[in-house]
Image (tube, rainbow, N blue to C red; front, side):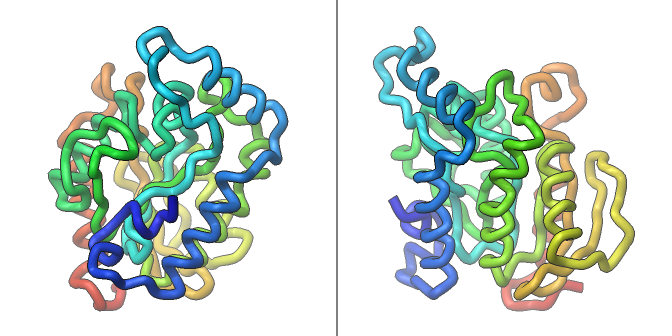
Amino acid sequence: MPLARVGGAHAEAGIMPTQAHEIDAIQSRVIACRRCPELVAYREEVAREKRRAYRDHEYWGKPVPAFGDPLARVVLVGLAPGAHGSNRTGRMFTGDASGEWLYRALHRAGFASQPVQVDRNDGMRLHDALITAAVRCAPPGNKPTPGERAACLPYLEAELAALHGMRVIVTLGKIADDTVHRIVKRSGSYRSPRAPFKHGAETRITLPGSPAATILASYHPSRQNTNTGVLTEPMLDAIFSRARSLCGARGSAAR
């Protein structure tokens, strides 16, 4: 299922530039990946055994591709698929509580076509936004190892390089933030000092082939954060309001 046909308004308009094909090609490599034997074994075991509440569901059980608008200016980077969320549904942040929070906020900000996410056939469309992750397979305990994070890094690096109109990278949680900054250190440059990770922190960067962009850090919408009030809906709304402000009008250069 090509990403360009899953996501945004540009795909609906029939615009299929080279960039969209390049993003699709990356997702094909992601889905076929078997680089980490322990993650392969875990994701497939979860898909076989299933959670009782989903025993009638057909689990995806593969690496989860990016989802959204292939010409997005706002890119969201999460941690990794949930074992019974994205590993079940096959779509980023879909099928669990984190996704409920995230898509509601994206809808309120005008980036998502609807507030409710169920599965990859629910009609969700993203406009000017794309969701990806630091790690593409569900890890045990939701804690990927440093080696697993390193093995997945080239996929995210390729996506960011292909998104030539990207203006904002929203990092959802510290691991996502660290991963994006690792890419900047490898292939890009800083236009402002790296901001320590905290909700709302901003760092201006440049990546090859792209205009100036801003890394905008956010706390992850995990239950651990949302149930304890570490992250509230107004705090998440503020992130996407700021992201839209940083983008400006389509076609304008980043300040």
